[in-house]
Length: 253
Image (cartoon, rainbow, N blue to C red; front, side, top):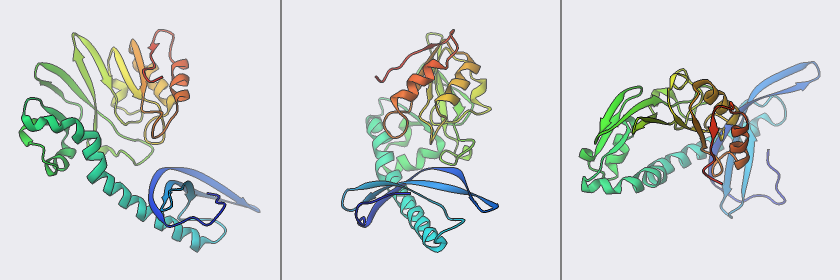
């Protein structure tokens, strides 16, 4: 749902933020349906968050279904453009340009290899990894831990994306990646854990604290909040929920 003081201009881009279950009761009948949230940017520079559903129980069902179909189509196109141009070149390629000189090695999930090769990164400078394996690269030991969603669809398990346990001087650092609580990360043994707390695309701060209290690292650091989703308060609330034996550290003030 979105309110405007004037009719908005043409939609420039849309991003699916998440899905929640909703219900509506009319007389003695209750309808359950999925409500999708989109962040929408218009051609005139204005933005809005719009909630809609492909299966509205009441109201102008045809109009809302048409709006949902339109936003899904624009969102898919937006995601494709960002995947090809922004996400890969920004978050990965900017860090991996040095690999063209073959002085360093980049370690990535196998699923990302094709995208990087299309961007000009030399294959000999890339090491692909699989989930839940042990590796050693340039004298550094690390393990991969599956990173995926269990109750949402942003990071499906079949993509093979991972978090890492990096072992330096005998200390095990776990960088969880974009993940929920899973059967894989509940088995993690580490000294320091970096876990997402922002919700929407990953576990929220309550779930993150639940995981940390279960795997019992010495230090826990909240990540994945304060920019796209999540707030600094999520990090603070995460720390409050930790067992007294675990030290929580907030790196981003």
